[in-house]
Amino acid sequence: MNALLALVLVAAVSGCGVEPAPPPAYTFVDEFDGPAGAAPDGSRWTFDLGAGGWGNGELQTYTGSRENSFLDGSGHLVLRATRTVVARAGSPEEVAFRSARITTRDRFAQRYGHWEARLRIESRRGVWPAWWMLGDNHATEGWPLSGEIDVVEDYGFSAVESSVHTGTSPSALVSWSGGTGNDAGFHTFRMDWSPEGVSFARDGVPYAALAWAPGDPRIPTDPARPMSMLLNLAVGGAIGVPPPETEFPVDLVVDYVRVWS
Image (cartoon, rainbow, N blue to C red; front, side):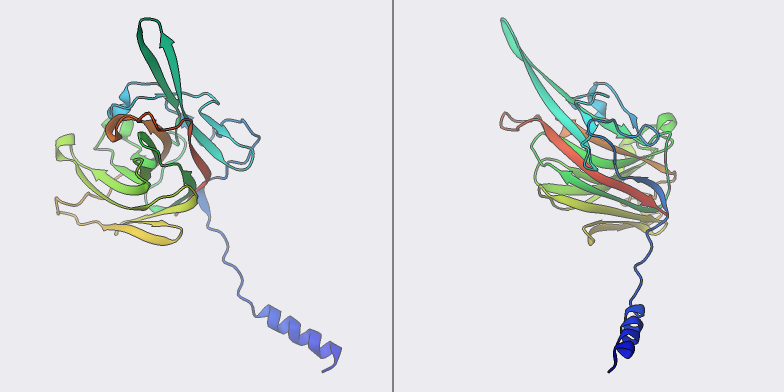
């Protein structure tokens, strides 16, 4: 075979390769690129601030401080829960927990589609990291009328859970959940939400799914409104107080969040 023919054959074979699929047309994307110590992008996220238990008897105060939320300069967002102990003469010591909760409320909401995030979730007793969603009518209708989808949350037992909560009132709330194991590495979590149902996967492996069943009171209804996202790192509350052996700070590290239709 002469050299010219060999080159023609190589070019022909190379041209038969399958072209990689183009990335989806994202309706929301944050890769968290930016300088170390910067705040989350204010055009995409806002902060929920304050204490008061947040409906679950939680212990933390959510802040907008870079102590509790910051870019690490390597393409990650860090949400950090801290514990401060203050000694008081003649009285028990005072323990203060601070953390962060960010939301796309008033920035982005969508009904249906594909929702994906690459997360590193530290599983520690008494600390409650979550990536979740609320209906965009939450401010006016409240919970559970707004609906809630917990894409992934961890209760401190090295497992993650995904849930759907809907109802006409707290007493009529219907919930469903499924879960899988968790570890200290980065994992890609994905939710696919459609008029037929919702499914959840980790690193491309499905672990839970729910088919909507209108009229069946045992199954949550398909949330009726577009939903905004939240990322937060709660402390205590319904999952229990952090025991003394829980080491702080605790981080929820987010590599990216992507949504498409």
